[in-house]
Image (tube, rainbow, N blue to C red):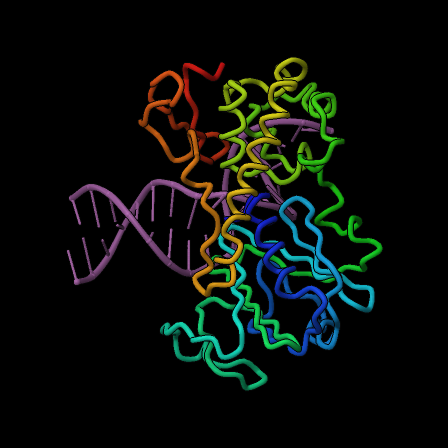
Length: 293
DNA sequence: AAAACAGCCTGCGTGC
DNA sequence: TGCACGCAGGCTGTTT
């Protein structure tokens, strides 16, 4: 799920469950995901109270007592599964051998649950990530933005500081399609394949157009549409926040409102032209060839 | 220097 | 039913 609106939704759900509570136990079920987990993560997190949360691009930062923040990225397939102790365990078969970790715990109720945090108010939050493209690290809270994964990120699209002038400046001289430029987290941070497609559709800009040619008047059309689609999606995810604590991890309803993403061959809502699918930089792009120029 | 690409992983849907 | 294949919402090196 994880583009900016999904990460924002997950983070709000995590805050609702964890903020103000103490982490009593961390179960680490493998050595790492995309990168190795930080050294002595269990010892550095256990016993700490959760102070606050912050999102930067598609990263979540969980501020802990003691001056460190847990930095979490959901990758392509990451989910957070929260449940109260005593809540019914979802029956699910897991391979033998995945059944226990070094500290003698029982089989995970979820496959691919690599990390489980338990709290002093009886909740358990699991990081489930089948493809293991996610990442977890610890960073000093006062230096969060200096972390190597955050240092090169561009502006937050929902900040007032993200203006058409700022976007234009980032696009000037870029000889790559606008689709690829918007996926570049150094240009603007937090957009992924879906919201880039949706924002370009709303702004009537062809995904094939050279990024440099979007600087100026087209950027002035694009920036409000980026903000609008993200806010609408956060709103749709937020409306199902309570679902977040369900073990099925279901989130959000915005997928019902995609105008182009995943709609190849279906009519454009505005002109009836069939939505096209092309591949750019190895990723699917969906757009209306008539409306987007 | 910027832009394109391979690679990391598993799961799901499709077509044979 | 089984199998091969293509595809998936991301990002980081490495190569061009």
